[in-house]
Image (cartoon, rainbow, N blue to C red; front, side, top):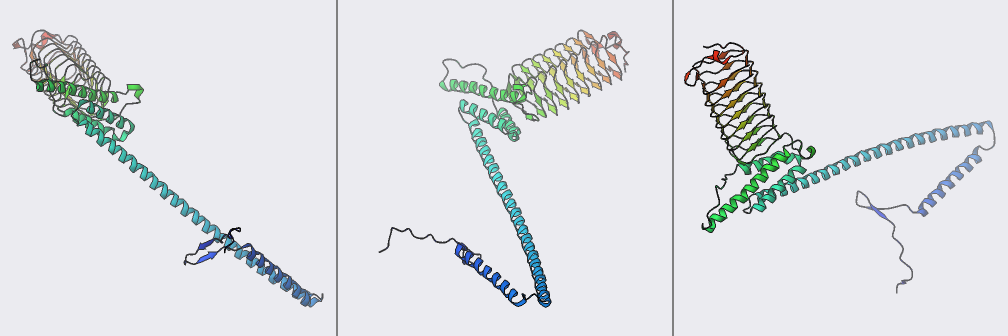
Length: 431
């Protein structure tokens, strides 16, 4: 029967070898035994040398000196071998260290990749969920999707252009504003459709406000500004737009419909800008706006007042067949590049007082149905007013002309236009 009063002896640690055999570590007893044997061998060797060459004769001294020399050589060789072994161990240790560092870098890279993949999956999941919300039937869910996209873009700058594209695509989806509430006696479906349209209007104005806030460099001290954004709202129905002091790269509003007043004062359009075919139903402000690239307002319709006073156009600006149904103001506007107003129609007053045209100004076939003002305007390049219809009061008082000026086949109140009546700064050349 085993005696449980004494604990069993701990087994010695056994290390596996590359060949699969187990190796035991040296015990203290083995080390002591080896040290004793080495000591006994050293004592025996000394006693033997003393016995053989310890008589003090010259021959014995010579033999001892030889033995000592051999011993020194042996010790030196041993020391050299020891140094080589130490160098080998150092080299091996350095190689192990390099290997460990490389393995550590690989593990860190793997961890970084895993974290990056996890972050990308999280972003993708949040993005997909927000887009699904944006396509929901209920307006509150769509609003939640917009705010989720807003937060996602704010936290992930690399996703901002994509999310702006998604919001822009949502605004380009077909939508019509309800004209008036249905009669109380109308069917329930009519009231439901009207209520749904009003809710959709709130969703769309929220989307516009999100874009406007993040495109404004001054919004919340610039902490929520999204730079270098392209905006494509072609064909979109936009309601009471307020993009004041915003900054855009390439902006496309072709065939867009602007309902209500439109405020684009001080906007920086840094790239190509297109408003061709757009319709503005309310008052429109482009005052102090800056157009760095080419801009197109071809076939645009301004149903209310259009103000471009103190705006600057550095590229080519075209207003071909534009319709200005109310007052158009281009006072103190600067056109650094060429400008084209061919076949444009100004139904109400057209004011170009103090405007500066550094390059060519082409206004053929333009109709000024009401008063037109070019007081102190400056034309640095050619100015062509061929076949222009001037109606009512027209003035060029104080205007300056530096290039080729043409009023061929132009009329004033239905009679041939006589440029000398306008008292320009420089005589006109009537061709």
